Amino acid sequence: MPKFEPILLANIDKPDSHTLKVYESTGGYRALKKVLAESTPAAFVETIKSSNLRGRGGAGFPTGLKWFFLPKDHPGPIYMCINADESEPGTFNNRILMEEDPHQVIEGIILSCFATRATTAYIYIRYEYPLSYDRLQAAIDECYAAGYLGKNILGKDFALDLYLHRGAAAYICGEETGLIESLEGKRAWPRIKPPFPAVEGVFRKPTVVNNIETACCVTQIAARGVEWFKSIGVPSDPKNPRDPGSYGPKLYCLSGHVNKPGCYEAPLGITCRELIDEYGGGVWKGRKAKAAIPGGISMGLMTEAELDTPLDFAGPGRVGCLGLGTAAVVVLDETVSMVDFLHNSCRFFAHESCGQCTPCREGTAWSLTMLSRIKAGKGRLRDLDLLLEIGDSIGIMPGTTICGLADGAAWPIKNAIRKFRGEFEEYIKRTNPTGYMVNDAVEALPILVGH
Amino acid sequence: MATAERILTDEMIEAIKAYFPRYPTRQAVTLPALHIVNQRLRYVPLAAVVEIAHLLGLAPAEVQDTLSFYGFFKQDKPHGETRAWVCRSIACALRGGEELLDHLCHTAGIRPGQTTADGKVTLEFAECLGACDFAPCILAGDKLVKNVTHEQADQLLKELRGGNHTNGKGQP
Image (cartoon, rainbow over all chains, first blue to last red; front, side, top):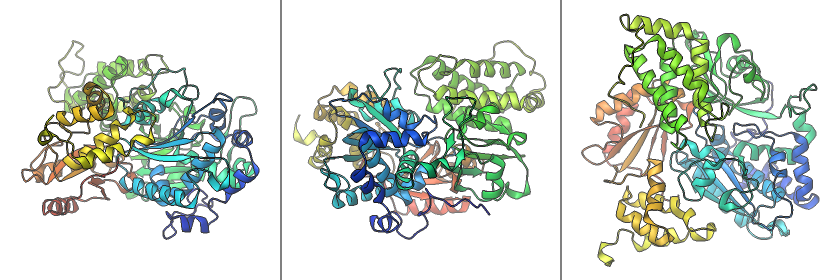
């Protein structure tokens, strides 16, 4: 069995773990009291900076640096937005934290607001999490009553209001500037950066957008110290002075074809195979793995041979994936058709593209059109090259879109076709024996189910 | 506007106004207001959009622009007493999510987005409900139904059509 002692998930199995009483009985809010009594905002920013904590939401940007980028001596207000729009397929770690340990989340938010001098914080929570909403709201109410929120928190000259803001089932609201636009009451079209939110964010004021798990890491760093945090994970590359490393515990979501799907806490850097075998009880039904998504569907695919890749911030990139993402591993067993996988992925992104940038709106829609055609036995070998052309040309990386949704749509296309091209060709030849070599323009199938 | 024709009740207006102090702009209350109306009416007709806009000091087009972006709020007619979201994203699809949605559509005789003739249930597909550890799953109103078999889905449909409805959250 795994030997790592869970920290972020330490309390989730206790009865009534979501209540203030239980949270305080396990030492909850002691870190907040300590920091408020002994530290200053600037010093606490330094603490988080020196921990090299990287955001857990997907991009892995150093949290302390994000805070440090806020303008100094700003008259305010400064806003904190907590991103709980967890919508990346395969990802559910934030849901578990909000449902089972909401006070750990809130303590981290209060600490983060103390550090950044934010006086209002919004938790942008996706519509699909009604239990998380109720648990968080109950916890917020308890905090106001106990003096952890409101004016003069713990008797100090520090005030904070914390509100829940409910989304309406749109993936793009998890993109930080899409979230900001949505919070402002507009369509969630991501903004061109710069200006970055730290300079001009929600309501045109300096804003920090942090993830739920990041907030929990802040709580634990405040409670246990920087040395504890840096004793876990993968150190920075000494040859690369700009590498912040991959420190700390991480919540890995494991789902798909494994015996024991679930959210598991392990040190950053555990390999995908260790996660599947030691935590997930291996691939289900005695089968072999064919591939795995390393960190939510937008990160692409690792083949079976690549499963020994460490799941730290640098690992998945070394085997051609987009990155660690949300560290949500979805296992595909040997019976899965890559055509089905890619169709599912393209359908998701065609549905969730916000429509602002043409390459993404058209690229995701056409990739679904082509995958639907291939799946229906009308595919042509040429379609694979057309799909790769889409994959290589949409996204921030080629420079054609405002946000990273398109990169996330492109990666499964690029990885699946480049790593499993033989299977796609075989499928197309088998299902379309008379037409697979056709190069002329063909009509789309009449029925499309993107929207 | 005559009182009798109003869509927003006094209660709804008070609930919406209670959100004003939370934000520095009225426009930020758009989503909360839409949720408040949708919870009570199960849709947000255009007339309600106009009234919300009036309340928030916005042009109706601004509210309609936001509303139409999400694809979440119905406008032509109310959805069923319970809206049941069946997940079709990858983790659920690998464990029979798409077949589950097909099965439910077949049993209920409707397509995703449609409502049963008795007005009890609206079936919807969902993109990742964030409960991949319980795949395949359904969010029926506020209730997450986990590891759903076809038999359990039939049972759920029967319960929902029997009147045990559970609508979405009241508070945005």
